[in-house]
Image (cartoon, rainbow over all chains, first blue to last red; front, side, top):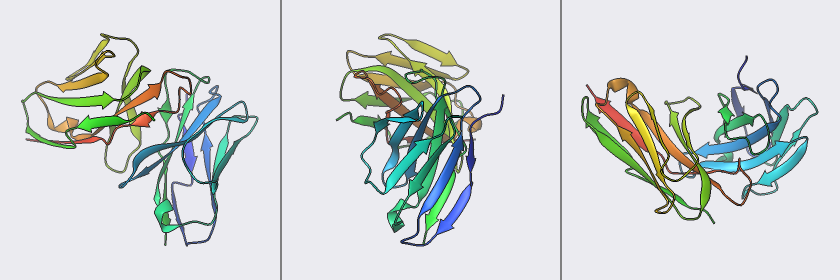
Length: 113
Length: 113
């Protein structure tokens, strides 16, 4: 079974632009969560989607948004990029909301110049 | 707000030695995760601990959970170079939001041959 895939793997943007990252969960998994990893703040939870609905949200500004499609694929969008948004963005999939196991994708490395 | 503290932050040890990484958390929780991350890579799940007194072992790593003390430990036995990585604990709140985990700061382990 294929693992979690994230595209693109690397991205360079400039301040003020917006970006969309994509995550395809493991086949059959319906819950997708997003995390941001930076050297300064560490790993932080962004949001979780299940059945096309946002179920949980971390403490991030409204510039960070996401959605989930009927096939469970998820996208996250960051508008008006700031230098501090440079990070590794990780997506994790789970079978169901509340499932114990989470499987992480390889991540998207975003650099904001 | 759930806080998770890990120590030490950095650990340099010689092959063959034993050591323990500690993970303290501030509120009640019904699950605790340990992950491994190699440089530039995603997170690899090591253990999920679900109940007080839970102990899990895989190779040279053993994790335990004391929910009363709100403490988990990751014990490394007879370290080998391949264990060099950053180790994270992550705690899910017992109020729901299972994927809304809070991560510790990570422990960067360097095993010297």
